[in-house]
Image (cartoon, rainbow, N blue to C red; front, top):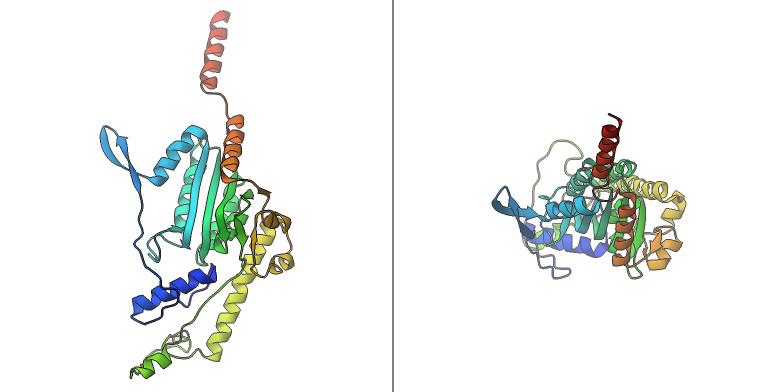
Length: 308
């Protein structure tokens, strides 16, 4: 609430309903069921002791064998993992950054794939992650695989990658910013509740939900939204080779399959499995055959022995 988001409107409705529930205010919009976040894990052997291996550890173990690290970007996007438990599936920007950094630091990882299925999320932290991805892809390829949606903040992440692949039914876009302010003053008044707020600083109470939004506060919000929208459009334009005007001309629309490629928001249409197979094959072709280095070392040792 009172925070700008790059997310689909329906998801923001859910957030409003959740916030109303937390605040003890009746604000039913979609009949949201708030669930706890669950993180499945698997057993691993660690020095003879059984312990829990996180999904991130499992993915890294697989990547060390194949050279291709797959990083899921799913559900609502938040700055930090502990920020909100609005829904069962969420991904934090700090978590994505941590996995990308792990892939960069591991010489056994040749390339990374961000597998996206997200309606977007918070503005806070998103553009910082985008900048990190832009820097990281100069070191190792980072592919965006849209499986099945990359909207708003998720598309900001996707556009920063080396390329974007989506299937026929997958969608990208929603390049825009949205924010809601809830004014509960009439509801409180009808319940016989009068709120008195004491504050210092002219702008301290600008976005209070127990009072109508003032003209000055509205102007401040509009300025802030313009800045984030310009930033978002600029990021997409720079990474996709489009003009800012062309990006804004999408009007935050959603584009699927071949249409997304046509407007320049994606590079190819390919099923998820075929895309992963292709990327894995490209990585395998670029890596030396198993034991190749040890064979070369043995051959060099034999040659040196023959010269003695």
